[in-house]
Image 1 (cartoon, helix red, strand yellow):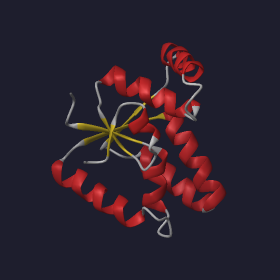
Image 2: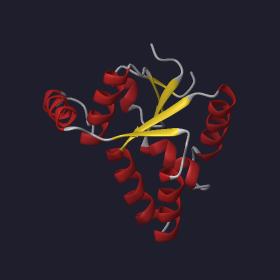
Image 3: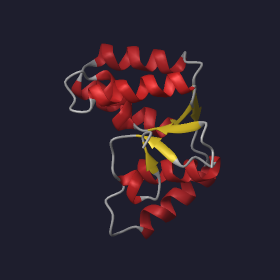
Image 4: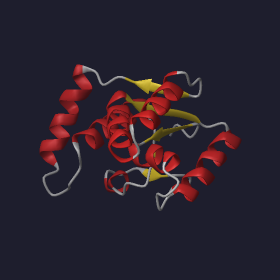
Length: 138
């Protein structure tokens, strides 16, 4: 298990940005604990796409652009780009789990986490638990 890395999902990014989000306080606390423990962060270009779109719709263009600039300039978060192979694996998972309401981005996130040996996600999306991963710092 790669205990020194955690995957960051859209729900965590959004909760950090929106102070009116129900999970904002918890997200700040988890973020601070991640910083204290110097845990490395990893996310995907699919999650960033999803987050930028959500921020743009819910909080406005300026907040989305500022978020994007901060992520692109970050030295603590690694952005993994979904390769053709990961996309194919994600599609197979998406088709397979007809009994779940996983998004295609969820499936891509799961495949990336498997590839990088990451067992835990910083998220408020229970789909990660359903996908067999731990969430936050529990």
